Amino acid sequence: MSAVIIDGKEIAKALRAEWKTRAEQLKEKGIQPGLAVIIVGDNQASGIYVRNKVRACSETGIYSEVHEFSESTDQSEVLHCIQELNKNHRIHGILVQLPLPRHFEDKKIIASIGVEKDVDGFHLNNIGALVTGYAVYPPCTPYGVMKMLEKNSIQIEGQHAVVVGRSNIVGKPMALMLLEKGATVTICTSKTTNLEEHTRRADILVVATGKPRMITAEMVKSGATVIDVGINRMPDGKLAGDVDFDTVREKAGYITPVPGGVGPMTIAMLLCNTIEAARRIQSEIVSEINTGK
Image 1 (tube, rainbow, N blue to C red):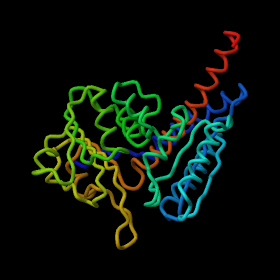
Image 2 (tube, helix red, strand yellow):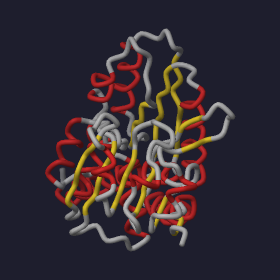
Image 3 (cartoon, rainbow, N blue to C red):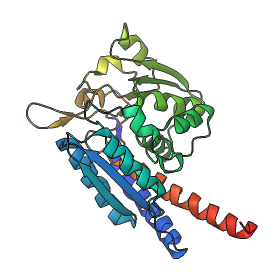
């Protein structure tokens, strides 16, 4: 029997309706959530992602602005832009679209974003908070995966979760979030010896390697939940995930498609973090008024 398809588009649609209501409630109190996106260079995929984020903001009632820089821009110009956005009261979230040009220091750029505006969840302070279980702004993609599991009532506690991929954006935070919910977690990479021995033991398998269709049906436990974070452009122009969807769906219990799986959830959780940032600022304002500061 084929696996249940976890429809990220439908889950994201429902969540965005919820976020829109929250944004309207904040607006009634005089605060419109605001997101600033910085993009450097003319990477086509990045451009598409940014346009999708801006459109999602507009549909949700979030103010947004895009700051575009050429490929040859000096890093200092972007740092100056971030400093100004940190001081801008209309902006509650700042997102730097990755990847950046090679002459940029990614860590320095991300560290310059005010922690209270780091809605992507990549700042060292936010990652540290994730380790201790007190993350304010969890990284959007793994946050979206957790929401997908929750909305499908998939048990995490006591389950064996295997994460294939160790990136700071997905793999590592994903493992931490699953661990926080009581899973036994194994982290693998594309270079792990006998990878299939680990993946076949997974009740929950999350794959984020950037290698198209590397996970086959023989590598998956019968009835497992398979979350495919990968998105790869194939020679024929079509998109494919890191999981061989057509064969794995016949063995898994739940599976996410590509496209239409994790991707829409990433944007949905970015909206969530931005609205939460605005809400926290509004709460601070009320607290200061009440205490006479």
